[in-house]
Length: 318
Length: 318
Image (cartoon, rainbow over all chains, first blue to last red; front, side, top):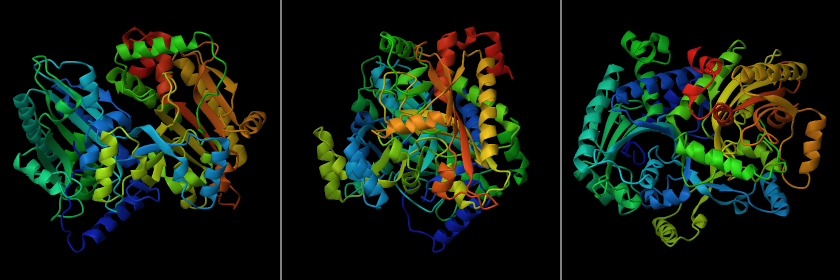
């Protein structure tokens, strides 16, 4: 999945109020636990149980294709990240990791700043890692290092916490959230057909859960003046689709899954080639895990015991 | 758990070689997936399966006490972190999150630096979050916000990825790893008795898995000149115990669990009080999840199908 799931659109007049009401109700029910930072929450046991069971259903939906399962941590190699061109498009969302490498004297000065409530960033320097921006980002350099991909292509299953620097009171726009992805690497036609087949599979899964999901063409929120052209190009070439479900707004439903065809973007950038020497194309299908769980709570209420039998059965009894 | 699990001690002559051999074998078996940064690895499916099943056994070992389960993400509130005094003791291990808040012109200059391989940290500024240093850190400010703790105390179950800025080729010293913790908040005697009871329970669990675990008094690797005194004090008061298992060295076994009594440290810092008005004491029991999994692979070999029946049964068949 490339960058965040929904584009910015004009709000309903009461959208902000509806978001706050929903967030407050989630917190009151201890489904989300506030930490004092917007978009950063602990998850209560019931929230996690729904998410874990959703995760199992996604595994089932994708297991017939025998993906290679890899679980990357929530930080990645900064050099690979710099190479990914994420900073071209979404510099404002990226999170870099800094640390302290100074002397005991620097340490004393750092602590003085902290105690006096002053900026202490001068005592921090950039490390070799950044926060994972999307679950598939560590995969492309790894695939390149493994050497040529078989002509029939390859398929991966990844899952990790991802970070986006966009503090918000919208519970469906967290700064730190989990993304499950399937990633296909191979020849253009195969990759595109696979992406399109998942648009159907994803719709089926969300409908089976009882969610009123609709698909739509989409674009990423590219930064800066050139961004509008990039977004228009992405739409024109039908590179990105989303499945949307109303969470805090009917006018502005939230993207809970995305289906992205990258053409040869990552193949060329990282040097991923097929066994016949051609550049690999890639596509990914991403599940916004917290968003699907929030859509379930919004659609069916805060107590899973009262959810429709078909939804409960799919999540807990299969 | 406070800070990292083992203290620095003199090495066996061939320790570095043994670590490299073990790491290489884990990578060859695709149990760990290299990312190009020491201590940052993807986890293969078999590794994850062992870890997930270990996690279930820990849940069972702790479930009779009915802890409140909360899953915090791998970043926490920077203000709470500054307040925690972690920076006093372990400034070199902490990871802070920076991001970009500049203009389109700054963006162009940032990209120029990236393309020319120059330092681009001047275009990053500190955000309101830092990487989670230990799974229990977000819990203390949360407990304080909830108001007085019942006199019998409270118990939590937390689990998250944690970050330590200590690049190493030792597979058992990762920069990003998972820590499961139980945290007890209450009166001094109750908290201490609970901590000591877990030293027995933890030993039983690791022995049931077939791991040659031994307990020992321990101390944290406090930074700077004052650190030695803090460490001596911690030992003298028996505040920290560890369970150790040989992974890459018999002389220097690795701490895979720790048992920490914080006295009123966090209670006073964050203002956690009991219903009778006294300051709450706290203790935590931490499981180094990757370390226990690595200890299993080191002790029984890289193929779980060939592990002893009792270990397999405990992990997969209970």
